[in-house]
Length: 246
Image 1 (cartoon, rainbow, N blue to C red):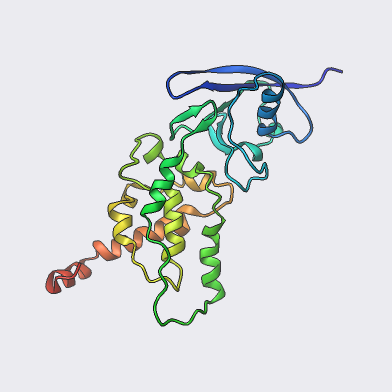
Image 2 (cartoon, helix red, strand yellow; image 1 turned 180 degrees about the vertical axis):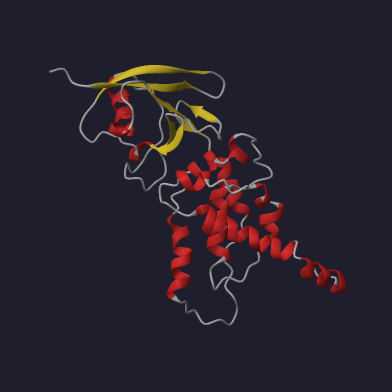
């Protein structure tokens, strides 16, 4: 009996030119998309560029768009996809292509530099309730796969990288802002430099998160509320006008 195969339609090229090329890949039990890409590298196209590391869905390296959906290739089983038609594997759309499936995500690290680091409150006992630990621990699960950044329409469709930080960095900001021992105020940063107001809370970032972080409900919405309270609350604005505080 002939071994079953699947057709992978893989993007090949760089940021200037590129095209989709079909490859026939033999299927094996438990195979994931990254296995299929490795098979292509090993037997058909050794110059195929792909970024990966752990193959355990913990390094965030192998992000791509499989059948049009941002996913980790190492976490996407071949038997979960329709095999009677080509499976498309393309690089993340929100970032410039370097080669084939590898994109330039360096912009994300520049955004990260803008965020005020942890600043401990002075003269506070270093003791936390378990509920506070649990609240910020969720955000620490982020593996920086940048799938949430890639699916966000502000970055994906409008390319507003100069005005917007994106869901990944709202998650990092939330981890700091909601830490009971942190004393920094990042509301102005979120409003003016990270552009949190551009987010229209469609929850598309939450849907693609491989760590199942509740990005919209637990990070973005509470941060939006903090910005509104600080800059748009009528009573606060009156106090500022009277006392001239910023």
